[in-house]
Structure formats: structure tokens, C-alpha cells
Image 1 (cartoon, one colour):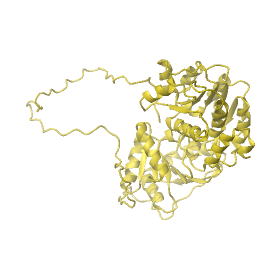
Image 2 (tube, helix red, strand yellow; image 1 turned 60 degrees about the vertical axis):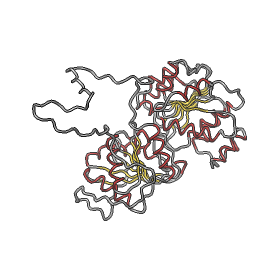
Image 3 (cartoon, helix red, strand yellow; image 1 turned 90 degrees about the vertical axis):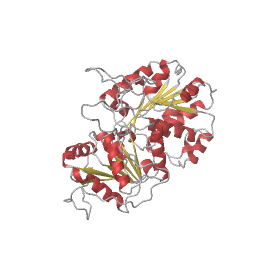
Image 4 (spheres, one colour; image 1 turned 90 degrees about the horizontal axis):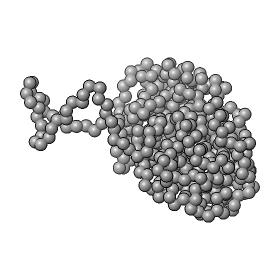
Length: 446
């Protein structure tokens, strides 16, 4: 079904044409008529299904004829990356309209957000924690919201945001339209949807969560000690171009990115300990092709939209099957094709079995031809790719190094710089208190 067949304003149809959207995806075809008619929608939409446009277009259509200066639409997302992606879609789809949107999330200074909220920007795309900060200071006013969207609701559950979501709901008018999107529907999400929605139309609820149909899956069994070596061998073969590589922890992401960088693979990493500017720069370099590999934790499995990304590689098998679905959903987006490779150590076979049960199919096992599975974990790093200009060499995140002091003579006084005093030892049991920062404590990002 073409976008010209929906009751959309011509300015929005022009926006879809600018983005190269010709035919609506199945979730768009099912959701758009209902959302444009003002109905509440509960949609089980898998990653890469085109759901962002399914709620962005109804928002823009509804707000086009209304005066600015009041926040009338609120989109809640679990991560900064997803908020930025939604904002980008709203901006591009609405480029021929006067509707303006703003993002509200942590990791950046609050001043620009305060200005946008005080000006009454029409659409607010926010993560729950930072939005509650602004609600607490009286800057964010949601009493005029007409459309509320909850995107990736199951991820909000995973990150512990549901109490925050309920606090935000208490600030939004009960008389509103609500669009609720979740890739999976565990019991707490079903309960939340009952609280938020009024007589909703259900889209795809009977469908079992699964990756996009264009994804080709393969499992590569390998001893844990050889994972890095096997990954490097896979990347150095011509068939693998750009790849998004997932690790279980931030520390493993740092170490793996350093290893690949020293082996000549242009790469960077993204996870919750990196600043917002670092995360944005890494994503921009990856999308532009300056980086061949982006190493990430699950924070990136929702909200990264890279056109024609050919490969997703699971360096670590995710513990939850749903996380596998979201990880591999970064490829084969919008009905394209892609390949998902998973490196599996013997200790991870049980997690793979859980993924296979969830998907209802057995993943293909294969060995990399010509790879020595009996070798030791010894790799000689040879730089085969030019390092991108102005890109700092990757090193594990750690405390800044301090200059070494001269050895202290046994029993002698310490050597100090003139006018400096050594800090006194902290009493036993004393608690270190970090300086107070803007905002409130929220669940840690992946």
C-alpha cells in the first residue's frame, strides 16, 4: 500500500518521498489508518518494522493545523539513541510542515532542553529520568498533551523505568490518544497497557516475537579463549564489511575495541559509560563509513538505525532471547537482508538453546574454513587499514594516570612539593559522597 493511499496531508507525503518511502511496511499499513482516526493502538512490532513512522506520521498530521507554543505530543523511549532516532524521523518526515520537536535525555546539559520546554515545543521525545527532572523543576508541563506514545515498552521494563513511566502518566491528561509499541509483551507490560489504553485496537499481538524475515542466522561454536581471534579472522575476510558487534559488558566492549583497533580494524565502542558526545560521534562515524566496526552493549540494540547494515555479530550470546531478537534487528531493516553471526562458547550453548526455543527453529552451526581451532590465543596485530584522521587510539577506560613519585626512603619522611600536603587517610567505615549532579538517580544504562 502506497503512502498516497492514506489520508495524509500532501506535505507529509512529500516527506515520505524525500526519505524514499514508497510502500508502507505491514505494521505501518495496519497502524496508520487506526492512529489517524484517533484510536488507541497496542502494537507488537518487531525491531526494524518501520514502527517509528507508524506513530510519527499521525502525530504530525494531528498537530499541523494547531497553533504552536504548547506541547501536545509526548514520545517516551528507553534510551538516548532511540530518542535521537525518533526525533530525526519526526524532523525529516515533517520537514515541509511547521511542527517542531525536541529531545529530552540525560548525558547532556539541561539548558537547551529548558529553553525548548519553556517555548512550548509541539513534540517532546524523552527518556523518563530526565523528563522527570524537568517536571520536578516545573519546566516541563504536560497538561496539554493530546497524543502519548510509549516506544519499546519492554525495554523500559528491562531498564527499571516502569515506576517513572507511571509517574509521568499522572501528569498527562486522561483524555488523550495513546499509541503503545512493544516488541514483546511480558505480564508487567500487559498490565501497563491496560492502565494506559482505552478500548485499544490490537496489531500483531498474536504474532510471536521474531527477527525480521530477511536475517540469515549462523552460530560459530568456539572456545572462549579463541573468540577474539575468530572474530578478527571473520572481519578480515572480504565477505564481511561493516559490522555491529555486541558484547555482554562495558568492560568487554572496551577490551574488544582496543584489540580490534590494534589489529588494524577501524572501530569504536558505545556503551553507558561513554558521554553523549562520544556516543553520537561514534555512531556518526559508523554510519558515514569512517568506522568499519562498532562494538556495543545492549544499550545500542534499540535505537540504532544504520541503512543497509550487512552484519550483526554477537561476540557474547545474550542471556535473554528477546535481546537476541533486538540485536539482530539492527540488520535487515525495512524489509532488506542481512546476516547475524553468533560466537558461542561451550558455556553459552544453553543460552543459544533458549533462543532457538523462542524462535521455534534451530540456528545453523558452522565452522570457519581454514581457522585453527586448536591454536593458542596469540594474535600478531598488523594494521591493514588506515586509521581515520583525527580518531584517537582506543584504550580501556580507566582513571587518569598520575606521575610516579620517587621511592620513599624506609622510615623517612615523604617527599612533597612545596606548599602541598598529603591527604589524610579516610577513617575506617567512612562513606565517600560524590558531588551532587543535575537530576535524579536513575537505573544504570547497559
